[in-house]
Amino acid sequence: MTTLAPEPAPSPGRRVKRFLGDYPLVPLVLLLVLLVVVLQILRPGIVNERWIANTVKFAVPLAMLAGCQTLAMLTGGIDLSVATVATMAAFIVSTQEPGLGLALAFLPALLIGLTNGIGVGVFRVHPLIMTLGTSLIGTGCLQVYQRTVIATGTKVPDALSWLGTGLTGGFPNALLVFLPVAALLIFTLRRTGFGRLLYAVGDNERTTRIAGVLYWQVILALYLACSLLAALAGLLYVGLIKAPSLSLADPLLLPSVAAAVIGGTSIFGGRGGYAGTILGALILTVLTTLLTLLQMPEGFRRMLFGAIVLLVTAAYLRIIEDR
Amino acid sequence: MMGRLRREGWIVGLLALFLALLAVTRGIQPGYGGGDFGSLARAVLPYAFAVAAQTVVVIAGGIDLSVAAMMALTSVTAARAMNGASEEAAVLVVALVLLMGLALGALNGLLIVVTRVPDIVVTLSTLFILQGAALLVLPSPGGAAAGWLKALITGTAGHPWLPKALVVLAVCLAAIWIPLRRSRLGLSIYAIGSSDLAAFRSGVPVARTKVAAYAIAGLFAAMGGLSLTASTGIGAPIPGPYLLASVAAVVLGGVVLGGGRGGLVGPIVAVFILRLVRTDLTLLAVDPNVTSIIEGAIMVVVVMFGAFIAMRSRAP
Image 1 (cartoon, rainbow over the protein chains, first blue to last red):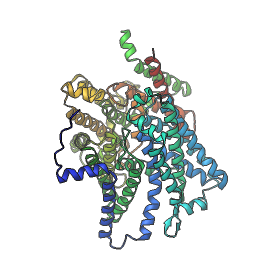
Image 2 (image 1 turned 45 degrees about the horizontal axis):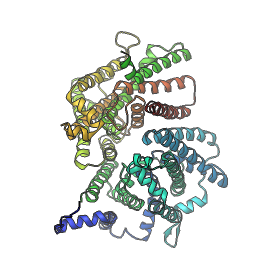
Image 3 (image 1 turned 180 degrees about the vertical axis):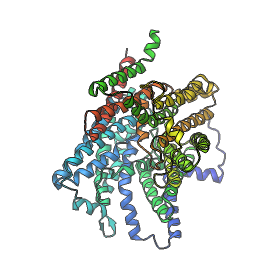
Image 4 (image 1 turned 135 degrees about the vertical axis):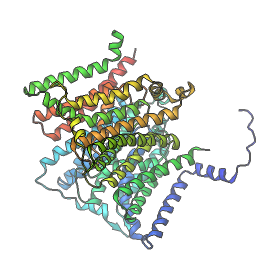
């Protein structure tokens, strides 16, 4: 290692590859732009301010849930209870008095996050199983709860509909919640000790343990944060959909994992970031619009969705890994 | 003998738990007899095949999120092809559907090997693809099942406590699992699950083994799909709750997520236990909604307990 061989002049192809490897967000932005251009070609005039605002509105809850997956995946975990937590928060807030409901909405999130954290951090249960179990328990509790409030009916608080669907000067109000959250997440991951611990634990758990990190504390904090974020996403989502049901956020669960993966976060931990995830969520949302516009049977749309997710992930991994 | 007992301790414990649960069931409902056990076995059948599929993949160090979607696709394909077909033609349909499961499973494996994308992401994508394909085959529940296929899993085989469904399950699983376990391929599956680098260095064809493991899982999933069609008489394009149940039973059955350890018997006993708990709760007139809370809680507590034991035994 004392003498470095002089590097041969890289070919243009390699140089592009190295550039993309150094700036992993660039291909994602390119893909997003490409999708929007395809959309504009297929249906000229569709891409306008209103459409952009709409896309952002639908991408925000997905991006927040995908944020939970990003955090969990950085440590080599996954959180399958986020959809249940989001649904619980949404359902509680639309069946209780406005003030009380908001406070109560975060209670199940707190409990589930705590249970997940203790199970994964202290008892070392596999995160997949742990969060699956708590998600089952949560769904059951929600069903029992639903029968107690069946007479009251559901009503989405006005403030949430305003946040979920409203526009102020052309900008979706959901950004009022999302931008601070996104900034906080990116800041936490890039600049704080906690963020660094998440990467470290995911990269090599044994080493961090030997280095004196209290693994269980990191994991507990992580899953608590995930659940609270998921509950917040649920509140925004119910404001957007305006029809609280017991399976409200379920369709977002698998796309939230997909968004984080497309965004370049490794499911084995230690690599990734939130900016990519946001792009991933936007890409998935635009892709869904595109597939809806193509007016093909539902079955064919799902097949295309799956194929494209796989293709994009595979291509992206090639770009950022082969150097 | 003692060593063997200790090694199989988890399975022995599960079996004891199952028998205890059966006794409890008799206690709750003195009339619980062979007929009820038969309906339990029929209800377990699709779950058990889903669990078998998941077990093979997990032992090989992967995970298959597409198992329920694969069952839905094979089930609707069988139901649609058998609709109006003669009994003899249905035999051909069953054979073709099994082949289709094998091929789709192999495709899962190939995609994982070729794209080098993690298993969980690839099977998540194929979940969407298979689901979509199922909707294309049959947009709404329908189709039909051949008479002999339905008769295959109804009734008993000789003894009132020996339902045909249980025999079918045992025969299907044993016909694949026992030869597999004794073959070089079976050993390779355990080897790549335990450490694919070590397996590679000892000359195991890692890629080929992985594809084979997923293909076998696809075959089991196709059996699950056929059993769905056989027990309901139709095919439904929306996947049932088999994915979550399969992962839960695999872990409860002592197969380690991450691969290389465990067998098929444990997960199958575990899935029987989970279904029997559900029966018991129904017999006790517990609110069906509370049932899912209890199921989730059992899963979490048992897995925590298992992890706790593992921690204790690792510490000196």
